[in-house]
Length: 330
Ligand SMILES: [Zn+2]
Ligand SMILES: [Zn+2]
Image (tube, rainbow, N blue to C red; front, side):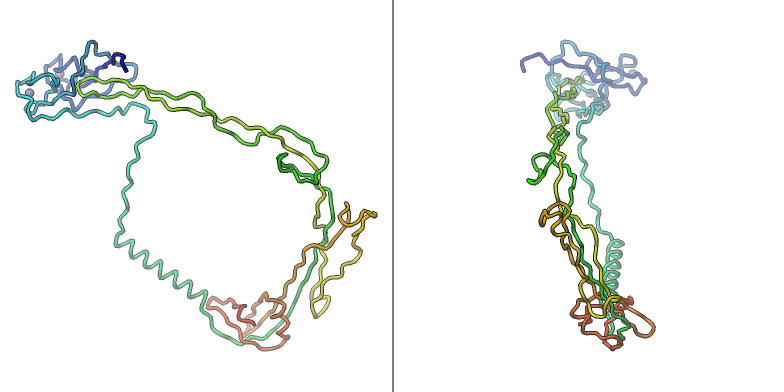
């Protein structure tokens, strides 16, 4: 940039006479007591209280006198306070602007917790506990049990073709929908550019002055995205009742009788509104086993169930926690 950079005065406080807000460039020494400026104690003024350093020429960061610590202009060959030479001195420390709004605070590395002896002991105990629990739940001992009770249950869902009201985005309405009505609704949001957020960054030049630099980041706002929402009706099979049969009906498992199905409702044929059909079938077989005053119930397959007669003896694996290993019934 060709434009003239504007320099502002850093501030410093005199520790000798407690005068505050002295100017970094104009007051190399305290105007009240004459003490030399400590360049390490320079700070940025509050926003809006900045004083321009008129006709300031930047020649580089100050050097700090090795003998009396006074800040000296990079152009000065000798200390203005004590006359010592510039050789071998370091430039003064640059101050970071802590008053500026921190857009993204610098991430401090999180120190990695070192595994201590205590932690190792705890992990060891935890591993032992896990092994113990696994052992408890997997190890079994064999016992001889009696088949105390056998029961079964079977059911058939009866479905009916029914008119169902649904809503969906109009681009995913099923092909057999009817009575469709549309309305506009918000479907999502999108981020659209909305100008930029700017703030002034203040940079310590190290010679008692600072400059401002404008930092801008793009800003976005959420905008609703509308689409067509469809309300419609569609004919679908719905479960309306359940036919059941169990041990009360017969000793041997049978499926419940399916009768009086309106498969051809009002002559509309299969699939017409009001017509019925068989749906999902479920079955479930239970053996109750007893040994030494304890009982266990096992859900088994029909094949396994049919092999065990009531009153028969069978080996059964029982876990240390007391539960039966029903897979040991074959
Ligand atoms: Zn002073
Ligand atoms: Zn000096």
